[in-house]
Length: 315
Image (tube, rainbow, N blue to C red; front, top):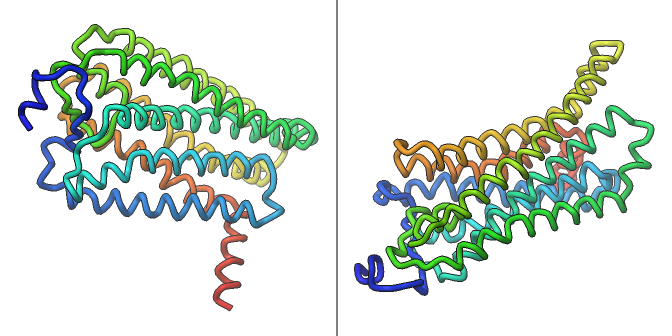
């Protein structure tokens, strides 16, 4: 093992994923909450997809975007958890060189897609509240499909330089990745070359892609709040605000951790590595876990359809 982990190679055929360095003895115990969260995320997101598909009254823009969000969460969590659990349970640490970059691409690609979907959902809430009479004419099925395709293409293309650039560097120092999965900055840090272009591009994506997304969402919710406060009664204001509170919770759960993790990973050096990894793992899994719960609890149409489903089965 030592010969393959140090300086006897250039561009190894495999990388070694360490899981959570420093907590190896607790890997089995750590796997229990992660496996539970993954199971709940799979069940919750597939439930959302099933309910929207089988309930004709939910065939509208908001629920189409919700299905896109559910699919994205499923891809992100499935890109990470199976390999991570195989490390925790079976000590299966090796990952093929190309498979590592493929995993990197899917993780980052679908995180960018999720960011774009949240912008599209904010647009839907803006039109529904600020221009309710034009909602059905603006957000047609055709427009929703084109918007979803644009979000998919943007995420796919903006992340493409990550694995492309990273795969060009020589890896001659070590093939050990101190993570349970391949993420861009962790892999690039192993290269024996000047990789500042990767770091600069990562910051560009953070501030110019996610930053712009957050700006558009902030503008949308500013206009939404202005429209809400112009309503004549308190009950009307509360009812209208209730229609977008779920989306606000989801936005906060997604963007606050990603900013915290990205900036901490680049600029804070005295935080123990396992803290970085645990926080990053929670960020990648918590949205997939919380999104179906938040929308299931806060969205009356989904909640009612789910209750009817259980009552019908119980009868």
